[in-house]
Length: 237
Image (tube, rainbow, N blue to C red):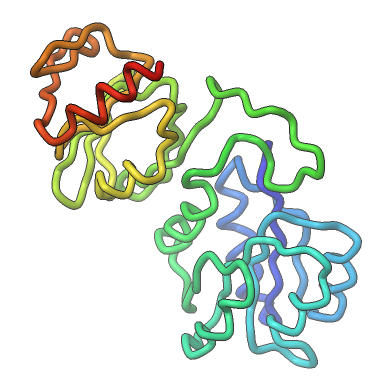
């Protein structure tokens, strides 16, 4: 399901730009746009959303003043030219600060923080349905795009220093991420790190030896310090 978004900025040009950016991404649903903080507050209280793209300095109400009485905590991406507000933002679930003027590439990076390591079920749901593991997905930044990958399609992940090469059932792609970050964020019941340079998907393991794991007829080395953890995971499964 789409991620429900609202845009609030007292500058019409700023809201027009974000409305255009959001319209380019099919997984974002624009619920509303406003140039009036007081009007937006009434709308948001009646219609909860998942994410607010929010200016800070506005007439009558600041962005912080608008968030406090909402009654729920949406994700917040501030759109501002004033970085000094960063400390005040810790009170709220702030994902990012977009500094004007906002490029589409920078917007994609910010939106990636919404997508990344979020379950496929909607953020808003008072009674969420059980997550279907086979349909879990993550978004990965590849060049200037956010590419959706279903976890079930990932075979293994290979470290390239500040990047990773992700091997999937349909090919490979390279994303700007560290393997240590993925090790922490990927579900441990589905992925395990077996080497300083490799994470593998447990569902795709074909065979295991003392020195390698075979996936898709490729032999992936097992690092000495990772053997004990791997054995523990395999015995658990």
